[in-house]
Length: 351
Image 1: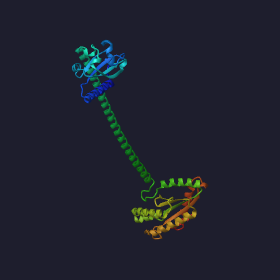
Image 2: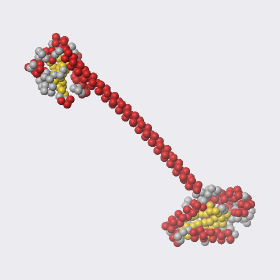
Image 3: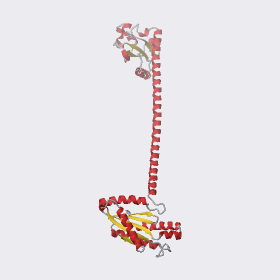
Image 4: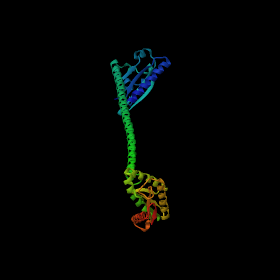
């Protein structure tokens, strides 16, 4: 096509300027389009030097706009737009002012009316096509923008969903971690007394034994047994026996002052104390203190010669670097406990 969008816009701009000029000078201004070949190089003022065919050689069409007949009769000035079309869709536009005397007698103004109408139809069709193409482009742009907006909305919704999902997963992971910790704590806790169970003590003993071997520090153990506890259960019942175990567990936990020490339930009526970095003198002092604290409870026990619940403790101390495992330490603690019971109970014996 002769016209593209930029050419149509340029011509429309020039027409608007001509209209503005008409308003400014209060005179009739006639605008005419001339379609010329690229070889055309003469100015409008020198057009009278040649014939009509030389001046408008290769003219495709000529359109006279805004009262052509009145222009011919009154002889007013005319603004002329020259549009030269070249191969490949290139074009050039030039504006000039013509007077009636500068036009050749057989110039474009004398072309037949049918030819002028044909040219006008071509120009109008070109403008209509350009407007249609512009409308199609605008619709395509609007559709593309709507699609982009829809995709952006979908992306934002996806991001929001992803953030919510990540938050929910994080919350569930935290809850699961807490549940695992609670399960681990319950699995390492004695259900009756609330202190650590035998499994927790065994694991702690292995860990502390390895640490004592590396640091070359002493490790002490105290096995605590309730005196005549079988007789206590027989006389007062198992519910009273369970209550007695719970009270003694609180006393033993309170009597162990250091956070690194561990009180655990060892068997039915026995507890055990694991005391890292504690020598023989230190563990014996702790054991004697615990015996006194249990007596202060004054829990009635008619089958005891002391009239109340008491405990016997066997304590032992070892250096881990001298033995490959803690079995010998536990064996000596049991031996000392048997010695305390043989000596009348309610006492602590170290070995």
